[in-house]
Image (cartoon, rainbow, N blue to C red; front, side, top):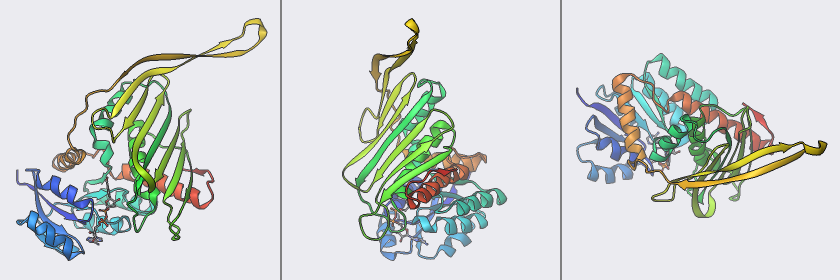
Length: 338
Ligand SMILES: NC(=O)c1ccc[n+]([C@@H]2O[C@H](COP(=O)([O-])OP(=O)(O)OC[C@H]3O[C@@H](n4cnc5c(N)ncnc54)[C@H](O)[C@@H]3O)[C@@H](O)[C@H]2O)c1
């Protein structure tokens, strides 16, 4: 089978990681590196001498040998570039978040269907060994009924020019949670604040309610002195801490919980809460780089015509929550229904 021709568009901070993974994949042939910044192209030409470079997106679109385009440009450009790619008959892997508005994300999903092309979103964390393992445990019912998700994703910078901290960092948490749960929240509340004078929120708190007892809370922040990447999931049977900074024990699973008994003796209702404290264990995880797993999955989907795990619809679900969170912030933390 001849290799799948790939073009990587946008080679700033994140694009080179995608480029490196596609270049290492024998089933892919990177044909173009495209960026508006000639300086970025110059340094990449040294590393990838056999790949053509261009500042003109049209060169990529018109090349019949390009089967798939990887869009790693700023968020506000995702819709335009991905739409042109789909209309030119190319499969698309687009960076998170899929688009900066729900209507634009919906349009991309529709374009992918109309042109019968694969549309996949780089929800990187879904492809990590930790989240793949968590998904398996959720499906096996290890946690019992999930009661809460509590996540902290904070560091100093990187300030983005075109989006706030919610659109930059929360896609990671939202993609993890919607993937693990397989369902969406019913309401979203968010508050946030800007400290640079330009109105772009750099600290924010998101609160999601689901149609059961599950509540979820996310703290995203570009003004933290230290980097924290922690997610707590509490279930009726077990609890887990996912610490992405931890090199070896990213998942710690706790056999801890409560046992609730109602005591109605002597006609007086008393609630008795007992505590269960069992083992903690840290499962061995597949350490393959998430982008390697993801790039292989994208190529598999193209070859087999299968739906990606993080397809356009998964991207749209995340954008819906982001947009609702943005509306809530602007309305002073008002609850927004999805
Ligand atoms: N999945 C992840 O973990 C992860 C991490 C970081 C960034 N991202 C995403 O990657 C995307 C890019 O972020 P970044 O931090 O690399 O930004 P960046 O500003 O460092 O790089 C963007 C690059 O795109 C180029 N560019 C802009 N418009 C273009 C156009 N029309 N055609 C060709 N090139 C164009 C710019 O010149 C720049 O080199 C964003 O969507 C961001 O959310 C994802």
